[in-house]
Length: 163
Image (cartoon, rainbow, N blue to C red; front, side):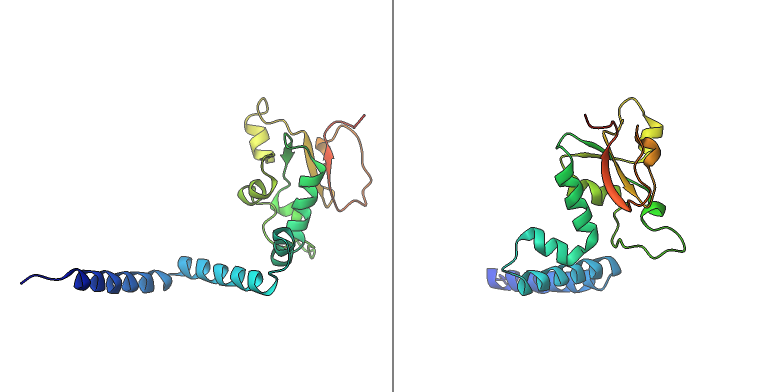
């Protein structure tokens, strides 16, 4: 007995649907599905806005902060990224949301600039000398060769004083 191509296609479709249903019941895939749905809702609701504006709506002040850093630094900059504790000090409500301290997240939004952490600098100072420092909540000022006022909550500064 010969099975037709239509039958094979139907079997393939059923198997694919069962596989997708099983995958989306797992927590990791559920997160991706929810994220994609949320992104689609933003795109649909704000279709007249630019991609930059939609990112700002979706990610809040975190995206706006990285956009500011991108605008204030050259493409060749090596930027020191503060630690999680610097962005979100214990016992204080932080104005930042998202994972600004996450190296992968920061690298994505600051590309082609290089992003380094304190740990990276400690491991290999010869290759990872920052040219710019993100200062947040009074952190990372010690990497600057000059002093800045203490009231600055967020900013990006060149390591050497600009001439």
